[in-house]
Image 1 (tube, rainbow, N blue to C red):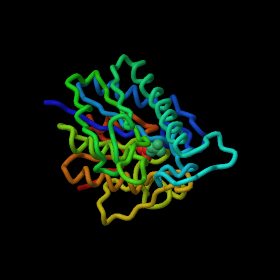
Image 2 (tube, protein in one colour):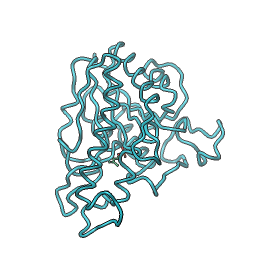
Image 3 (cartoon, rainbow, N blue to C red):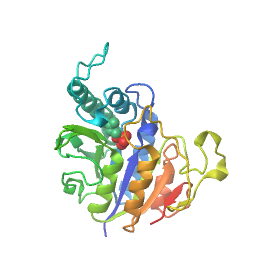
Image 4 (cartoon, rainbow, N blue to C red):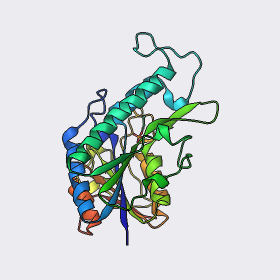
Length: 271
Ligand code: IP8
């Protein structure tokens, strides 16, 4: 019986969110170490990582989430057009991806990386592109993909496909996914009050749509939907019977604890 999990490494966890293209290499290494131990227990792991400062800052400046805008110029920017910015963000995302891949390989894992702009088009949880590529028969092969700028088949021409949309389709369509785990930065899970005011008691252990939560969505930095998008996509996945959990990725042992059915701190999204 195949056991498979999907883990989202949040962009705010694996990068310094407000400084262009700075990765938290040690956090990435610790996450990859846990992934490695799980593969040794025959668990198949699919990793989707967010963009953090490798994607959101330039995408926001060049309004790539709005699609093609005629004659947009930014005085003093190294890029001359949105089309150049699209190419640069794709390149920056490949750079972040190569850091994640190198850390996984340093543990002896085989890695298959799938940059979305090469196989996916259109946006949202029903984006186009087959997710069959994430199927493996060998747990020592880890598949990796990430939030990216993809082509769109209408007048927008391009747009941002969030890692949160990728995890939703992968979890729902690749067989035998038992859990989807969002590893986040700076918080233990969903909180009842804003993270800056929260105490240990404000963690929501189980979330369903009638439970109110507060999350930090830095709409001045983010071009995708922040915590609201995670909850929305997580809830979609939970409705199909897959366990959906949010944990603090600075404690990656919590990922292993979920899989090993031990106790852990974080939030479960109920169907
Ligand atoms: O951080 C966003 O992906 P996310 C992708 O998973 C880009 O929402 C390029 C900003």
